[in-house]
Length: 212
Image 1: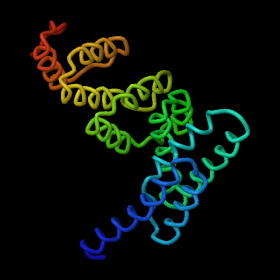
Image 2 (image 1 turned 180 degrees about the vertical axis):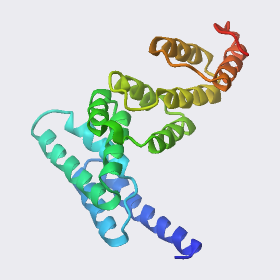
Image 3 (image 1 turned 60 degrees about the vertical axis):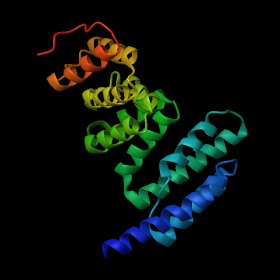
Image 4 (image 1 turned 135 degrees about the vertical axis):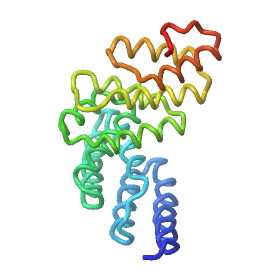
Protein backbone atom coordinates (compact mmCIF):
# COMPACT_ATOMS: atom_id res chain seq x y z
CA UNK A 1 0.00 0.00 0.00
CA UNK A 2 1.38 3.41 -0.97
CA UNK A 3 2.04 6.01 1.73
CA UNK A 4 -0.79 8.23 0.53
CA UNK A 5 -3.20 5.30 0.55
CA UNK A 6 -2.10 4.37 4.08
CA UNK A 7 -2.80 7.92 5.28
CA UNK A 8 -6.25 7.94 3.69
CA UNK A 9 -6.97 4.52 5.21
CA UNK A 10 -6.03 5.61 8.72
CA UNK A 11 -7.99 8.85 8.44
CA UNK A 12 -11.04 6.91 7.31
CA UNK A 13 -10.79 4.55 10.28
CA UNK A 14 -10.44 7.39 12.78
CA UNK A 15 -13.31 9.31 11.25
CA UNK A 16 -15.57 6.27 11.31
CA UNK A 17 -15.05 5.54 15.00
CA UNK A 18 -14.81 9.11 16.27
CA UNK A 19 -18.00 10.19 14.55
CA UNK A 20 -19.94 7.42 16.28
CA UNK A 21 -18.18 7.01 19.62
CA UNK A 22 -18.27 10.73 20.32
CA UNK A 23 -22.06 10.40 20.32
CA UNK A 24 -22.27 7.07 22.12
CA UNK A 25 -19.98 8.16 24.96
CA UNK A 26 -22.84 10.37 26.15
CA UNK A 27 -24.56 7.24 27.46
CA UNK A 28 -24.81 4.46 24.91
CA UNK A 29 -21.56 2.63 25.61
CA UNK A 30 -22.99 -0.57 24.18
CA UNK A 31 -23.45 1.33 20.94
CA UNK A 32 -19.87 2.58 21.08
CA UNK A 33 -18.54 -0.96 21.50
CA UNK A 34 -20.77 -2.24 18.70
CA UNK A 35 -19.55 0.53 16.42
CA UNK A 36 -15.93 -0.25 17.29
CA UNK A 37 -16.52 -3.90 16.40
CA UNK A 38 -18.14 -2.86 13.13
CA UNK A 39 -15.23 -0.59 12.20
CA UNK A 40 -12.73 -3.35 13.03
CA UNK A 41 -14.55 -5.84 10.83
CA UNK A 42 -14.84 -3.37 7.97
CA UNK A 43 -11.48 -1.57 8.12
CA UNK A 44 -9.30 -3.92 10.22
CA UNK A 45 -8.32 -1.11 12.59
CA UNK A 46 -9.46 -0.07 16.06
CA UNK A 47 -8.82 3.57 16.99
CA UNK A 48 -10.09 5.06 20.27
CA UNK A 49 -9.89 1.65 21.94
CA UNK A 50 -8.35 3.02 25.16
CA UNK A 51 -10.94 5.81 25.35
CA UNK A 52 -13.71 3.23 25.13
CA UNK A 53 -12.07 1.07 27.80
CA UNK A 54 -11.78 4.06 30.14
CA UNK A 55 -15.50 4.77 29.91
CA UNK A 56 -16.38 1.11 30.45
CA UNK A 57 -14.14 0.92 33.52
CA UNK A 58 -15.64 4.07 35.02
CA UNK A 59 -19.20 2.83 34.48
CA UNK A 60 -18.39 -0.64 35.83
CA UNK A 61 -17.36 1.00 39.12
CA UNK A 62 -20.68 2.75 39.66
CA UNK A 63 -22.42 -0.21 41.26
CA UNK A 64 -25.88 -1.58 40.60
CA UNK A 65 -27.09 -3.94 37.90
CA UNK A 66 -25.63 -1.77 35.13
CA UNK A 67 -22.12 -2.40 36.47
CA UNK A 68 -22.32 -6.08 35.51
CA UNK A 69 -23.45 -5.14 32.02
CA UNK A 70 -20.52 -2.78 31.65
CA UNK A 71 -18.15 -5.47 32.92
CA UNK A 72 -19.44 -7.75 30.15
CA UNK A 73 -18.98 -4.97 27.62
CA UNK A 74 -15.46 -4.39 28.95
CA UNK A 75 -14.55 -8.03 28.40
CA UNK A 76 -16.14 -7.97 24.95
CA UNK A 77 -14.16 -4.87 24.02
CA UNK A 78 -10.97 -6.54 25.23
CA UNK A 79 -11.79 -9.56 23.07
CA UNK A 80 -12.10 -7.25 20.05
CA UNK A 81 -8.71 -5.72 20.85
CA UNK A 82 -7.18 -9.20 21.11
CA UNK A 83 -8.47 -9.99 17.63
CA UNK A 84 -7.26 -6.64 16.32
CA UNK A 85 -3.91 -6.17 18.05
CA UNK A 86 -3.15 -9.34 19.99
CA UNK A 87 -3.32 -10.35 23.67
CA UNK A 88 -0.22 -8.42 24.76
CA UNK A 89 -1.49 -5.13 23.31
CA UNK A 90 -4.89 -5.75 24.89
CA UNK A 91 -3.25 -6.10 28.32
CA UNK A 92 -1.30 -2.87 27.81
CA UNK A 93 -4.42 -1.04 26.64
CA UNK A 94 -6.25 -2.22 29.76
CA UNK A 95 -3.32 -1.08 31.90
CA UNK A 96 -3.34 2.43 30.41
CA UNK A 97 -7.13 2.61 30.60
CA UNK A 98 -7.06 1.74 34.31
CA UNK A 99 -4.51 4.49 34.89
CA UNK A 100 -6.55 7.06 32.97
CA UNK A 101 -9.70 6.01 34.80
CA UNK A 102 -7.97 6.64 38.13
CA UNK A 103 -7.86 2.98 39.16
CA UNK A 104 -4.24 2.26 40.20
CA UNK A 105 -5.23 -0.86 42.16
CA UNK A 106 -6.72 -2.39 39.02
CA UNK A 107 -3.69 -1.27 37.02
CA UNK A 108 -1.50 -3.06 39.56
CA UNK A 109 -3.42 -6.29 39.00
CA UNK A 110 -2.87 -5.97 35.25
CA UNK A 111 0.85 -5.42 35.81
CA UNK A 112 1.04 -8.46 38.06
CA UNK A 113 -0.76 -10.58 35.48
CA UNK A 114 1.62 -9.48 32.74
CA UNK A 115 4.74 -10.01 34.83
CA UNK A 116 7.81 -10.00 32.63
CA UNK A 117 5.70 -9.61 29.49
CA UNK A 118 5.40 -5.86 30.06
CA UNK A 119 6.75 -4.13 26.95
CA UNK A 120 8.75 -1.10 28.11
CA UNK A 121 8.65 0.34 24.60
CA UNK A 122 4.86 0.57 24.79
CA UNK A 123 5.06 1.89 28.35
CA UNK A 124 7.60 4.55 27.46
CA UNK A 125 5.64 5.61 24.40
CA UNK A 126 2.46 6.00 26.45
CA UNK A 127 4.31 7.88 29.21
CA UNK A 128 5.71 10.28 26.62
CA UNK A 129 2.20 10.77 25.28
CA UNK A 130 0.95 11.69 28.74
CA UNK A 131 3.83 14.14 29.14
CA UNK A 132 3.15 15.81 25.80
CA UNK A 133 -0.57 16.16 26.57
CA UNK A 134 0.26 17.34 30.12
CA UNK A 135 -1.61 14.56 31.92
CA UNK A 136 0.24 13.85 35.14
CA UNK A 137 -2.50 11.92 36.94
CA UNK A 138 -2.11 8.69 34.89
CA UNK A 139 1.66 8.89 35.46
CA UNK A 140 1.23 9.37 39.21
CA UNK A 141 -1.23 6.47 39.28
CA UNK A 142 1.39 4.46 37.42
CA UNK A 143 3.89 5.02 40.22
CA UNK A 144 1.29 3.86 42.74
CA UNK A 145 0.42 0.79 40.67
CA UNK A 146 4.07 -0.14 40.33
CA UNK A 147 4.65 -0.49 44.08
CA UNK A 148 5.43 -4.11 44.94
CA UNK A 149 5.36 -5.39 41.36
CA UNK A 150 8.92 -4.84 40.08
CA UNK A 151 7.68 -5.20 36.50
CA UNK A 152 8.66 -1.87 34.93
CA UNK A 153 11.44 0.70 34.94
CA UNK A 154 10.19 3.43 37.27
CA UNK A 155 12.71 5.89 35.88
CA UNK A 156 10.76 6.11 32.61
CA UNK A 157 7.72 7.35 34.52
CA UNK A 158 9.73 9.86 36.53
CA UNK A 159 11.36 11.13 33.36
CA UNK A 160 7.98 11.69 31.72
CA UNK A 161 6.73 13.54 34.80
CA UNK A 162 9.81 15.75 34.85
CA UNK A 163 9.34 16.62 31.17
CA UNK A 164 5.72 17.49 31.90
CA UNK A 165 6.52 19.65 34.92
CA UNK A 166 9.38 21.34 33.10
CA UNK A 167 6.98 22.22 30.30
CA UNK A 168 4.55 23.67 32.85
CA UNK A 169 7.30 25.44 34.84
CA UNK A 170 5.87 23.64 37.87
CA UNK A 171 8.77 23.91 40.31
CA UNK A 172 6.89 22.75 43.42
CA UNK A 173 5.78 19.61 41.62
CA UNK A 174 9.34 19.08 40.47
CA UNK A 175 10.52 19.24 44.08
CA UNK A 176 7.83 16.75 45.10
CA UNK A 177 9.02 14.51 42.27
CA UNK A 178 12.54 14.57 43.72
CA UNK A 179 11.17 13.60 47.14
CA UNK A 180 9.28 10.66 45.68
CA UNK A 181 12.38 9.46 43.86
CA UNK A 182 14.33 9.46 47.12
CA UNK A 183 11.60 7.46 48.85
CA UNK A 184 11.48 4.95 45.98
CA UNK A 185 15.28 4.81 45.85
CA UNK A 186 15.32 5.59 42.14
CA UNK A 187 18.70 6.88 40.95
CA UNK A 188 18.38 9.81 38.51
CA UNK A 189 20.76 10.32 35.60
CA UNK A 190 22.98 13.45 35.38
CA UNK A 191 20.78 14.82 32.57
CA UNK A 192 17.68 14.30 34.71
CA UNK A 193 19.26 16.19 37.61
CA UNK A 194 20.36 18.99 35.29
CA UNK A 195 16.83 19.45 33.96
CA UNK A 196 15.32 19.28 37.44
CA UNK A 197 17.87 21.81 38.73
CA UNK A 198 16.94 24.21 35.94
CA UNK A 199 13.27 23.84 36.80
CA UNK A 200 13.84 24.47 40.50
CA UNK A 201 16.15 27.42 39.90
CA UNK A 202 13.61 29.03 37.56
CA UNK A 203 11.03 28.71 40.34
CA UNK A 204 13.38 30.17 42.98
CA UNK A 205 13.44 26.86 44.85
CA UNK A 206 16.58 25.72 46.62
CA UNK A 207 18.20 22.81 44.79
CA UNK A 208 18.50 19.89 47.28
CA UNK A 209 21.22 18.04 45.39
CA UNK A 210 24.55 18.66 43.71
CA UNK A 211 24.65 19.03 39.94
CA UNK A 212 27.79 17.74 38.25
